[in-house]
Length: 79
Image (cartoon, rainbow, N blue to C red; front, side, top):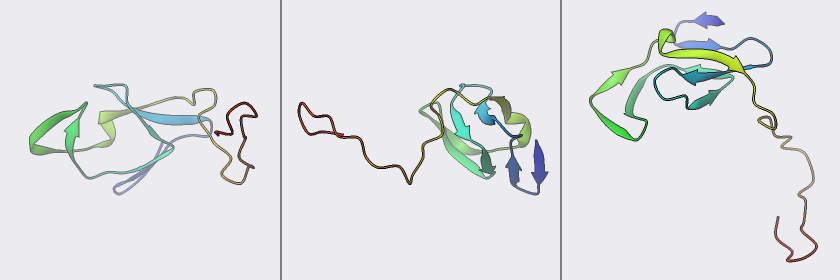
């Protein structure tokens, strides 16, 4: 993990997950206030710190190629 102020970056092939909920946040996070954690309102808002997250292996199919052509289902014409 690389920490640069409020910006944290996961190692290659890893993503961040919130330790409390397991929610995946991606390869980079800009830390700040979370008003909801796991669907629960935080009052006052929670100030995220790097220790709130853990690096996990990137799940299969996580990364999407945004330049790929859409795949059309021949049966109903829906992506």
